[in-house]
Amino acid sequence: MAGSVFGDIFTCSTWGESHGKALGVVIDGCPAGIPLSEEDFPAAMARRSPGQTIYSTPRSEADEVEILSGVFTGKTTGTPISLMIKNTSQRSSDYSEVASYYRPGHADFGFDRKYGFRDPRGGGRSSGRETAARVAAGVIAEKLLGELGIHTRAYVSQIGPHKCEKNIYDGTPGSVPTLDLIEKSPLRMPDADASKAAEEYLSGLMSEGDSSGGLIECIVTGMPAGIGDPVYKKLDALLGQALFSIGAVKAVEIGDGMKVASSVGSENNDSFVPVSGGVGKATNHSGGILGGISDGTDIILRAAFKPTPSISKEQQTVNTSGESVNISVKGRHDPIIVPRAVVVVESVVNLVLADRLLAEMGTQIDKVKEFYSK
Image 1 (cartoon, helix red, strand yellow):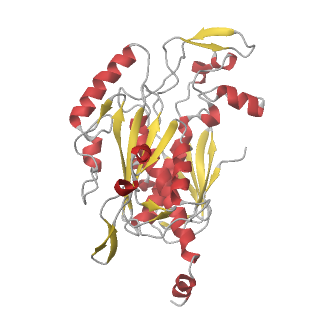
Image 2 (cartoon, helix red, strand yellow):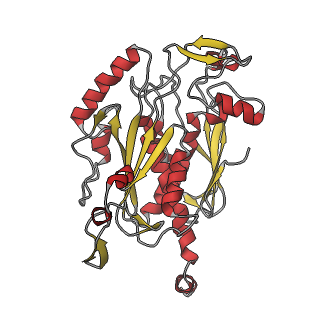
Image 3 (cartoon, rainbow, N blue to C red):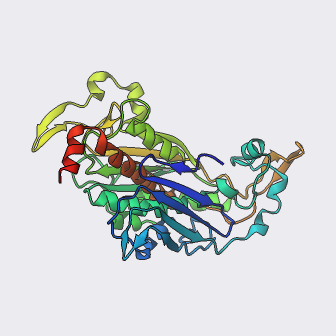
């Protein structure tokens, strides 16, 4: 199966399935000397782990990350880093019926046609559980970016019809919600009123055996200008690819996003202005990226997640013989994906940024000379 390797310099290759013995990731191209131990992973893994609230699947996984290679005496060695996460709470019997039909909203049908077989146990390679490996890799990318003063923060800005109106990013310095504020909500919505309304909305859907979609907003601060390429490897294109690689994402916005379709140039253009130490912008409709290259202002991203397709509410589909059947999906499933996906969004964004920052080191001869003249 191709397509499991991401990045050019800072690369990660995830492996494993939802109901296999384990899953994991191999990171190559990570610079030596970054402090790293197994104690660095639990906080991030806990933000993605299931079974934390009534709004997530009751499947309980410790998601303990084991470092198999690439670290010595508490620091990265520059060699491939292999991380493993053992699966400990599989209930494959929950999926015994799934092999006989194609679940609406899932990859079952396409996977079967592509490979001539599929692993029905939790979706196999198509399972959202694969993102645990990306979160583990994202911990390392976050450490690398932190050395450069670059920080990424994501939160849930909308669930169903309920949108955050307070405590959300407005473009001013310091307006990015803190992790503590985000984590106060079981839905990771920094607006307490919106969170409460969304919780009531979800409770109603859950009683009907249904699910909801939602929106995650992600802000990157401290990003220098000049990162990204002007054609096929535009920074926004790579970020979009990374976000779309998260299984349930169906739309991505950068900056004003879809609003630009109803805007005019005089409104949408960001005026450049002198600032202390260089050049800034009066506004940030572009979301921190122009011509595929970072412009030094905050990067603003949004990812829209579809409702969880595995629902107990009766649905119509066809079985593997092509006959129409009605089904109710059994098993342990999230009524909404977005709260657990917040850290996944941060992780894939960090993986893109780490890769492109390392790739940027050779774009000018002065940068090469500066490095080798030390």
